Amino acid sequence: MLKTKKINDVFDMEVFTDDGNYFGDVEEAVLSTNKIFGWRVRATKRSYLNKVLGGAKGVIVPHQLVKSIGDIMIISKAAVPSYEDENETSTASTMRE
Image 1 (cartoon, one colour):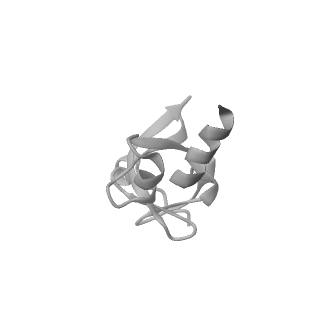
Image 2: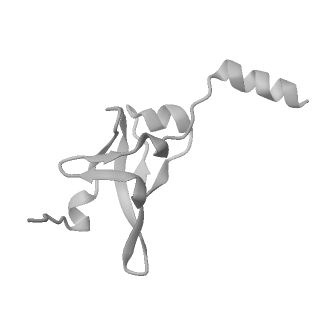
Image 3: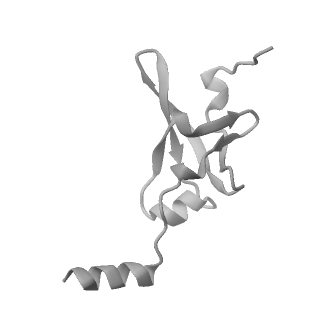
């Protein structure tokens, strides 16, 4: 039997990548024509997303990248923005000049 969840049950749920990294917390669902388009995930202090984004508050994860929703939400690591080290960033900006 297929178990379903109400959207209200998913709010403030912890989100992890399929690698096991803590990604953030679900803030809200993004709906499009009565279907879930994606999930807005808030970056928290201890999340990987906070380290990657810096000052941004979160990202929208497309629903296609969600692998499982239960006590936690598991998303594909393809949803994780790439993380560049500060040394790589400064080198890249120097090369553009």
